[in-house]
Length: 87
Image (cartoon, rainbow, N blue to C red; front, side, top):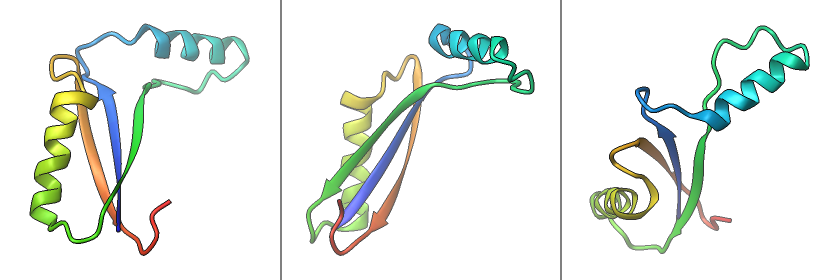
């Protein structure tokens, strides 16, 4: 089995008001050393055995492009973790 960890974040040119609000709140709590804060999405996808790495890469990219990330506003990257029993 493989576990795919997908990370989706806003592009640098896109404002992220929720992350800005969190950063400001942290400043009010005394955490003044924070220069920047990013907020994104995280997905875990467990894949059945027998899928080749090339097919898996193709399929995960399609899933991200079609469903998990908005191409106009977000970037994504992922890592594939080979496991015996992905949880």
